[in-house]
Image (tube, rainbow, N blue to C red; front, top):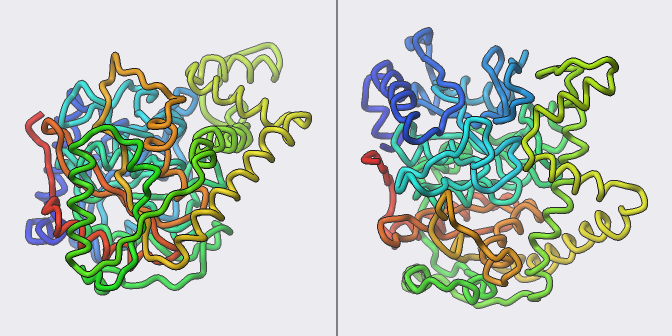
Length: 468
């Protein structure tokens, strides 16, 4: 249900129903770490653009007095003493929080299989992944529990789950939304993002979340537009770049045919279509570049998770033993592997040939993409080469071009801090898949307008999968 539709319902009723769905759906979806009962809300005092709208928060968003674990056992007893800036902004505009959503542990993953509570299940097929790391947030929107959910996106962690779950996933420009109070992954790549079920709602939510915050020195002073009032689907003369490297590495005919229909529809609406190809060597370097940078930054960011300052503590005879014991039991093997990679990249003798080289490759990738995008309005491609993989028994060849490029191209938006959005494009065997658009910095208004045109072309909006 859209925000507009919810506004026509009794506030208390809709918030209670959202909470009840969060609780009732848990057995099958496993999308929630902490359900938040709205029983103490004073509904008469709610005001704002999201007055009485139930919202789910990814569990790496700090909420004062409410457990915030980032899906890691090492934080299973952590109750923040302050709210993230986005929590304050949402509350100021009348939002009501009903869930802390599941995620990959410390946001370090793309499947939502590494959460301390176990896998999150896709409502379209419970045997399939939700995508990650913001999978719980995507699932709570896709299942109809809430209409808005907050996520974070470091490589594609909002936009990939959006494609797999048939919802809209938005990652705005780097600095557009404050990250104060968000448990980090990789600081140069992290963005706050969010999920809705239609483009109009997506444009409204950014009005609430965006803006300068002195608690976050990376947040921008750029003016925040009233995106929902600027929203229109006029793409006459808009220059749309088709990302041929991605399209050429997708093997599913139904995805290619649906994508071609979108391109045809945009052309019929007056958009100017241009095909672009980037250096294949750089495109194949997307994942390794990301993997080195992200894990190096994560290793530095999470050095405070030591059992001394906060979080779980496992006893030892010395401080060193306490830290070793706590981290050994507190982190999954998956996270430990990433910390090993990050630590290795940070060793002084390795920085030049690994971390600094990856940073230079990142710059080459961004420069090549921006050279084309600066004279265009958006870069468009299928969000993924297939529908959501199975939780068990699905293995990808991570060195194959179709994986290296088709499954990792969304990270370009993080490398360059560019606004990027995934929305539903079609279905294969009743499973959704998405299309992604990436635009120039702080051109979110253009991004929403192009996305609205696509929404009109596909007719796919307000999708809900409740019969799981």
